[in-house]
Image (cartoon, rainbow, N blue to C red; front, side, top):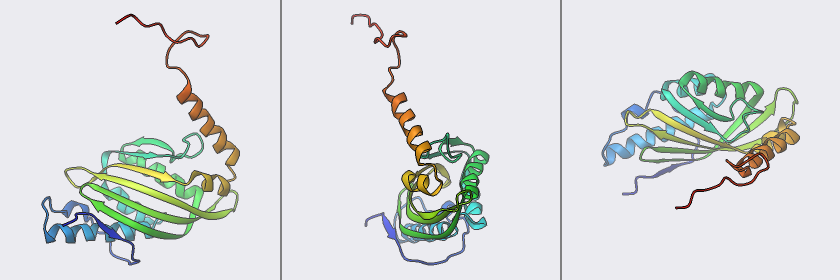
Length: 200
């Protein structure tokens, strides 16, 4: 039996700590619990930016967990790497202070072993500019042996965020800076010559 389950229907379910109850083995009980995980993540994401969403995340992230977001960290607090529950929750809340959510559409949720992937879209408006638009997102959660979230990777549509937040030039400069840093040699002298190597 394929352990992966896809869930894209719309429903509203109570959010009540389902991850801790996933059976370690297979069988119908495990499949039922995976379905509950899907339903509860769906309910959390339909409440994204609202108290129920933050409550769900705060109860399921471990205190030593890690969150990584592809947004430029120089422009959005959510961007970059955040470690520890307090830092993660502060980063999540900061995003939804700057961007207000008027609607959320969950396209798909996949649960495969210790991995939960949520594919979704948000209708956002920027508090400062007043501009509105839709932003796609893909979140990948990794659960640890205790069935808590050990790591989360968030991939957001940076181009749409830049337009809504009137940050297109700033986003472009930040991305260029990242690309230049990646191309920059890690060693060598001040003139940029490659470091000398001892013969093998």
